[in-house]
Image 1 (cartoon, rainbow over the protein chains, first blue to last red):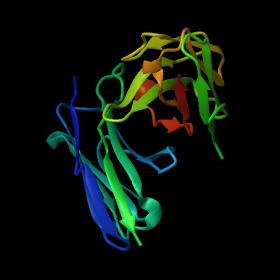
Image 2 (image 1 turned 90 degrees about the horizontal axis):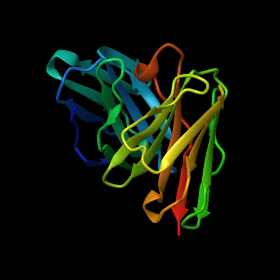
Image 3 (image 1 turned 30 degrees about the vertical axis):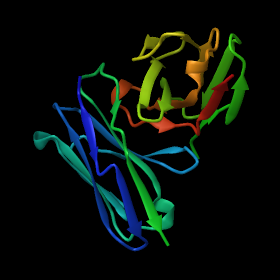
Image 4 (image 1 turned 45 degrees about the vertical axis):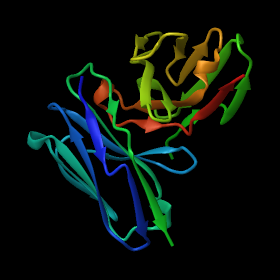
Length: 109
Length: 115
């Protein structure tokens, strides 16, 4: 099956800093999503981005499907950005979404 | 605001009990999913459903069953709860016509402890 690797596993930032989270996947995919899980456990869908670039406020994501990776950019980080960021992928129409193990982000005031 | 609502945030049950976890969505989504999340193992798919009365096994269906009698409601059933089913359970739904390719929207989760 597809392997999904996220890096770094942990990241500590000072408020206002920028960061880049990476998701590598081992095979071609037709679905890639980024999620943020806040400290209370709620998973929020940030992006549905099988290819290309999208932006939503201070967050943006780029997926280069041919090179099998996706990047999540967080600019001017805030303490509310803390939590775990997951990348999830699938291929074909019947495959399950496979989740990476996540990047745990802590933003310090 | 669209929502996926799980009936309980925290639940404590005894070994051997039958446990029902309820999930309701108000977006008229056809597709609904149950995941469990465990430290070090990430999110794993238990069951999913594309339509009323329809269900498909995910990666770890053993020890679980599901029910989808109405479009908006998807129930996860633990027939005889065991301690290894202590976990965070997450329900999700996605828009019609997209199956497992759709943008997933999650409920807030149920932390189940089986003693």
